[in-house]
Length: 438
Ligand code: CTP
Image 1 (cartoon, rainbow, N blue to C red):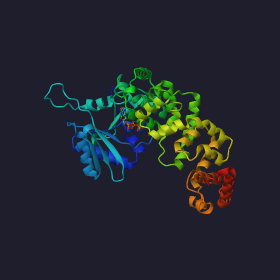
Image 2: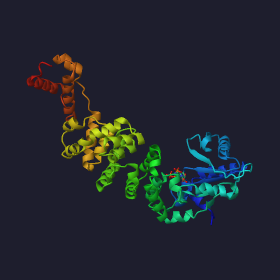
Image 3: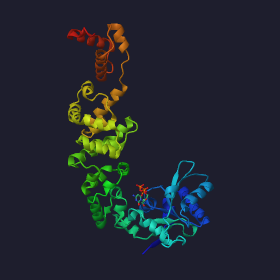
Image 4: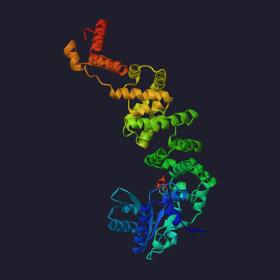
């Protein structure tokens, strides 16, 4: 039995007045065009949960398939906003001057089977639109037309599931129609501390074993995992993906042990500190340094093609593999930066992040100090030209070795006397019999 409840007071008390005004306007414009206008999905869910969410998804019912786009253009004109239509999908975005964006879709219009008859548009349209959605908690709508402004449209006891903390599919084919919903379901479950309902869980497991996730493109799976990485506690969703076997269908050679759980926990904890230091850190690559550990080359290549990792990222993973444990030991023993530099050098951020997953807080502090030292240290008084002019050295590997050695010593001692030190290095090399190359 559908429930039509008045949410006006809830909306008034929980939504900013600017947003309320916008919603009212959208309803008014809808009526001017003789269309029913609803705000749907995550917005309604979070309104009822009293969690701020200003991502407005609008569904429009009209007699035309293009009702949504027509509506968006009308709103765009009235409110002086930019409209981006996606004709193929019968959807549009309205982008306001301040960058705020809302999405408009057309409710799937049901046609009569017999040709020539008019499309049927009635209450079943929004109902069917909602029925096609992923989970009950995301399948409610609020009508915005003035006569009914603020009326909740709940056809499937969605609100009860929301109140009871239940993730439930609307029909048996939900995961078949869109297998990424298996990952979405876990994300919502862990975000809200909800529970997957029994039958939903069975369907998920069944469709998982029937390899439905393998039919989805890597790009779409990566998107869903990236959404998990935007959550407050992504580790919870990874744990649950491992528990339900979803992870195996996404990263087939990953064994989620308690050790891996600890490594991921630390990685997520330290990640923000690396982001402070390096721009454009990609969380998906960061977490992949752990998820792809000990993969053989062929499977790594498969993963690269599937998820679009850069070639150099995969190569660096393989190169780093054997160095992580020695580096962990060196850092834990607080070896001088010059010693660590010999093994770690100046690495990519993902190598540091990978390494950090093995370290405790104090050791990560030490690693960050090493990184900061690399970034601030440069030779001020000795250059290649200086060595050529002063010692008659020739350009080449020996000259670079001298500069590197001097540099690594300065990592340990920022106040190093560069010219006095280089003098000693050159003398030592000469004593060691390098005179012919020098
Ligand atoms: N949806 C769906 N199936 C999907 C993706 C989305 O049915 N695979 C529907 C859901 O009704 C969802 C709405 O589209 O509420 C919007 O999707 P999206 O913006 O991805 O998610 P939100 O529910 O808004 O969640 P979030 O809070 O993570 O943005």
